Length: 93
Picture 1: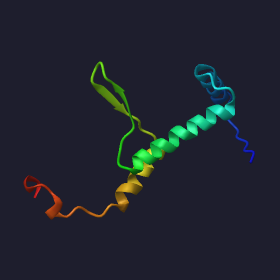
Picture 2: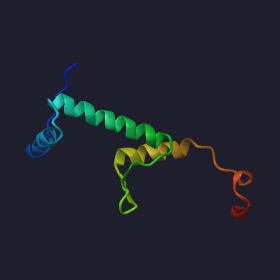
Picture 3: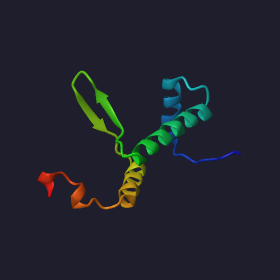
Picture 4: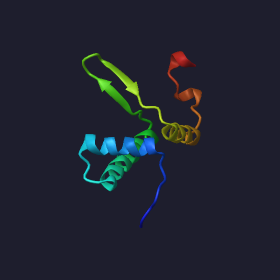
C-alpha cells in the first residue's frame, strides 16, 4: 500500500535531518523505525509504565510527554476497576 503525506517544508527538513543523523537508508526506513518506537511506547503505557530518558550520572530522568501517550494512559486508567479500601494499605484507610 502506498501512503502520501503532506508536510510543511520545515518538517520535511526535520525529517531529512533525522534521516542523515540516524543513517536511515530511506524515508521508509526512518518512518518504520519511528512507528516501531511509538508501538513500543504505546504498549508500555498500556501496561502502566512511563517512557523516560534516564541520566544515570545525574540520577535524574525526564518523562516523555506526548498527547498520544497521555490519551492511552487515560484510557487505561478509565478501564481499571476502582480500588476498594480493603486493597489499600492500612495507613491509607
